[in-house]
Image 1 (cartoon, rainbow, N blue to C red):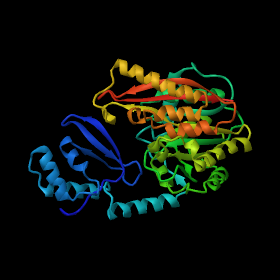
Image 2: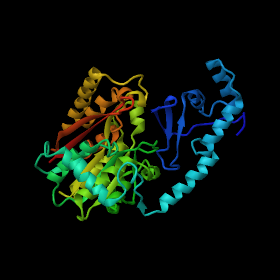
Image 3: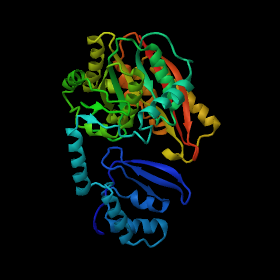
Image 4: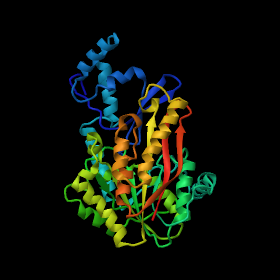
Length: 411
């Protein structure tokens, strides 16, 4: 790396978090699983890194930042920062590509997807995890909102189980009360927090958990793969490695079903281009062909299939780019808007849900849009939904909010 290099930050998750020394720092995290490391950038470095777009040389970046801040920033400072990010695998380039190729190859050859977040986002030891789910999730949710009947679909949170304990409790408590005895196939749809090239990503691996592994339903996965004639449903399989939106659901399913045998169909729903364009994916014949395959799975295995979407709602506040936390009035307005979106979901109106959420996606940042839309499209005819729980999880440090809901769908 030298002053003529043009550093390019690769796609990573960026959030703003409180910091005692600097007030707030920008944190960069890898959602793809190439590196477990993360980067904390104090405010003084953000104007530099924000220009790591592959267009400007280190020398040009130093000159621009010098003019912007009214200080003399040597090019060597930019070079040193870029070199550190390159070595940390946060920049595009041969160092990152070699590391990703190695990790991708190892993941592709594995038959089991490890429990990536065990010991971090939830207990890594089986007995502690069981107690936590029973006592801090299911018991605290209580019996309220659990409807009797045959459940065919479920929207559950994908926020970490520490913060989303009660929401998970409502979702999986309701599933426990209404899970048909014959269900042995769970289609698990999740948000991909890493960029995707294709609209959907399949994974033919068992998912490990601290409670035991859950096998993949290879027959169902292969049938869905055959429907993807215009895109490769495995081109983004690597995104499954670190994605928590599916992992958390499999953990709760494994606990809930105990020794009862079942298989999963893990699917990451991207639909990123449809979101960028603001277009309903129902107008994309290839997307519809794929999700119609989920409906066919219901038809081919009567009474044996249930679809789960791991999907949060809004992300607002300083952590997500807003100038300040929401006040009480804004929180109330957010809940009303979220619930209006959920009305389209409970009415099993995929197009209505998409349009309502897409209308303010840049402001509300609903990350569960794609998996919920996919679930709604896949549900058997005549299904009806019910909101079991709604919650706004507020960050104690900066007041940022992640909203999420538990929604059951019944035949």
